[in-house]
Amino acid sequence: MRILVTNDDGIHAPGLKICEEIARKLSDDVWVVAPEYDQSGVSHSLSLNDPLRLRQVGERHFAVKGTPVDCVIMGARHIIPHMPDLVLSGVNRGRNAAEDVLYSGTVAAAKEAAVLGIPSFALSQAFSSASRQEPYWATPVAHAPDIIGRVLKQGIPRDVLVNINFPDCAPGAVKGVAISAQGKRDQQLLKIEPRTDGRGHPYFWIAFARGVVPTGRNGTDLYALADNRISVTPLRLDLTDEPFMTKLAEIFPAK
Image: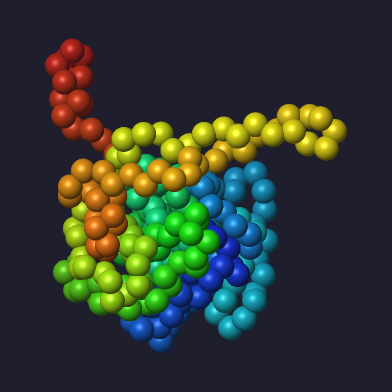
């Protein structure tokens, strides 16, 4: 099985090494193609107006000056001799649950793999930046290979990717696996922080409210993580809201 490993935190991110370690527990045929720089929050961006610069950093290890989606396309269409059988994106430093999946470059890379017809997983390790403790990287190493293997044995439907979030705890403290729906936060965590530069000119940072840990409702990815469970969420490429589409069809009848 040929595996393409990528991420959005960049070629030098610790989580990328963790993702490669996970991949090597599944196969010896592993290729790493990741962004040259941190691309967190770029979602499904494509570099359409800038050239892609490719740099080989080691055997079967490549850095792309572009987005995570660029990396998947470069890896699948140009770098690897044959189409990969699996794409693993991550392991992201921080969870990608609830609305995070809309912004996440980690999830977007797995989504692009699904677009190309390649089974894919987005892997993220939750952690609290307030604690100043490094993420529990040992948790995905211990649990991801078995989960991925079991899901692959079942088979992933076409146009579906699997989003896996690992809780902020040591491997032995994980309570189990929760098959979860995508959650929704009860409050808005994003905020604008105004600041002033050395010349007195204003500038702004998009930031997250600190000290707020949403748990969401039972059955969601947020709830699973709060309960120290690994959240496994299948996500579809088709974003159509069929119930509302039916209602719209009633007010715009076909002629």
